[in-house]
Amino acid sequence: MKEEIFGPIAPIYRFESIEEAIQIANSTPSGLAAYVYTEDYRKIRLLSEKIESGMLGVNEGLISSEQVPFGGVKESGFGREGSKYGIYEYLNIKYVCIGGF
Image (tube, rainbow, N blue to C red; front, top):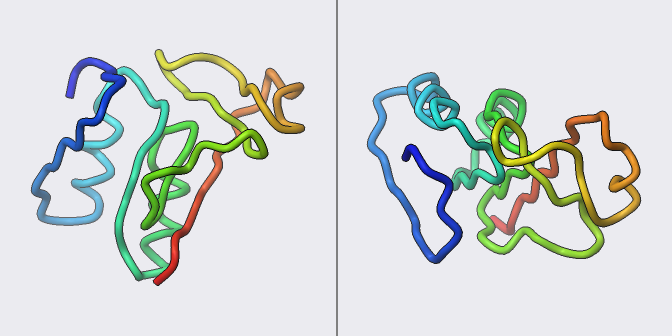
Protein backbone atom coordinates (compact mmCIF):
# COMPACT_ATOMS: atom_id res chain seq x y z
CA MET A 1 0.00 0.00 0.00
CA LYS A 2 1.48 3.31 -1.07
CA GLU A 3 -1.61 5.53 -0.88
CA GLU A 4 -4.05 6.17 1.93
CA ILE A 5 -7.43 4.89 0.74
CA PHE A 6 -10.73 5.88 2.35
CA GLY A 7 -13.17 3.15 1.44
CA PRO A 8 -14.23 -0.42 2.13
CA ILE A 9 -10.88 -2.03 1.32
CA ALA A 10 -9.07 -4.73 3.28
CA PRO A 11 -5.52 -5.25 2.02
CA ILE A 12 -4.25 -8.60 3.23
CA TYR A 13 -0.55 -9.46 3.27
CA ARG A 14 1.30 -12.69 4.02
CA PHE A 15 4.20 -12.52 6.47
CA GLU A 16 6.63 -14.99 8.02
CA SER A 17 7.11 -13.34 11.42
CA ILE A 18 5.54 -10.70 13.64
CA GLU A 19 8.59 -8.50 13.01
CA GLU A 20 8.00 -8.71 9.26
CA ALA A 21 4.32 -7.81 9.75
CA ILE A 22 5.31 -4.73 11.75
CA GLN A 23 7.84 -3.74 9.06
CA ILE A 24 5.19 -4.08 6.34
CA ALA A 25 2.66 -2.05 8.35
CA ASN A 26 5.17 0.71 9.05
CA SER A 27 6.54 0.92 5.49
CA THR A 28 3.72 3.21 4.34
CA PRO A 29 3.88 7.02 4.35
CA SER A 30 0.54 7.25 6.16
CA GLY A 31 -0.64 5.99 9.51
CA LEU A 32 -4.28 6.74 10.28
CA ALA A 33 -5.46 3.35 11.54
CA ALA A 34 -4.30 -0.25 11.63
CA TYR A 35 -6.23 -3.42 12.36
CA VAL A 36 -5.00 -6.77 13.65
CA TYR A 37 -6.72 -9.99 14.59
CA THR A 38 -5.20 -12.14 17.33
CA GLU A 39 -6.05 -13.63 20.72
CA ASP A 40 -2.45 -13.42 21.96
CA TYR A 41 -2.15 -10.58 24.50
CA ARG A 42 1.64 -10.47 24.10
CA LYS A 43 1.23 -9.83 20.38
CA ILE A 44 -1.46 -7.21 21.07
CA ARG A 45 0.88 -5.32 23.38
CA LEU A 46 3.83 -5.59 20.99
CA LEU A 47 1.75 -4.51 17.98
CA SER A 48 0.17 -1.59 19.85
CA GLU A 49 3.64 -0.33 20.77
CA LYS A 50 5.38 -0.93 17.43
CA ILE A 51 2.79 -0.22 14.71
CA GLU A 52 3.00 3.42 13.62
CA SER A 53 -0.67 4.45 13.50
CA GLY A 54 -2.92 6.88 15.29
CA MET A 55 -5.49 4.19 16.05
CA LEU A 56 -5.32 0.42 16.35
CA GLY A 57 -8.28 -1.95 16.15
CA VAL A 58 -7.70 -5.39 17.65
CA ASN A 59 -10.35 -7.95 16.69
CA GLU A 60 -12.60 -5.01 15.84
CA GLY A 61 -13.27 -3.21 12.58
CA LEU A 62 -15.36 -0.26 13.78
CA ILE A 63 -13.16 1.68 16.16
CA SER A 64 -14.30 5.28 15.62
CA SER A 65 -16.50 6.98 18.20
CA GLU A 66 -17.08 10.51 19.44
CA GLN A 67 -15.73 9.37 22.82
CA VAL A 68 -12.26 8.39 21.62
CA PRO A 69 -9.43 10.36 19.99
CA PHE A 70 -9.38 10.35 16.19
CA GLY A 71 -6.28 11.08 14.14
CA GLY A 72 -3.23 9.68 12.47
CA VAL A 73 0.54 9.93 12.34
CA LYS A 74 3.05 10.42 9.52
CA GLU A 75 1.27 11.90 6.46
CA SER A 76 -2.16 11.11 7.95
CA GLY A 77 -2.27 14.25 10.01
CA PHE A 78 -1.09 15.84 13.19
CA GLY A 79 -2.82 15.79 16.57
CA ARG A 80 -6.17 14.39 17.58
CA GLU A 81 -9.73 15.56 17.34
CA GLY A 82 -12.72 14.39 19.32
CA SER A 83 -12.97 13.39 22.97
CA LYS A 84 -11.01 15.07 25.73
CA TYR A 85 -7.79 14.32 23.84
CA GLY A 86 -8.54 16.78 21.03
CA ILE A 87 -6.85 19.52 23.03
CA TYR A 88 -3.51 17.73 23.18
CA GLU A 89 -2.22 18.75 19.75
CA TYR A 90 1.37 17.93 20.54
CA LEU A 91 0.95 14.35 21.72
CA ASN A 92 0.75 11.14 19.73
CA ILE A 93 -1.91 9.19 21.58
CA LYS A 94 -2.76 5.75 20.25
CA TYR A 95 -6.23 4.33 20.81
CA VAL A 96 -6.23 0.51 21.04
CA CYS A 97 -9.61 -1.23 20.73
CA ILE A 98 -9.70 -4.93 21.64
CA GLY A 99 -12.84 -6.80 20.57
CA GLY A 100 -14.30 -9.86 22.25
CA PHE A 101 -12.50 -13.14 22.14
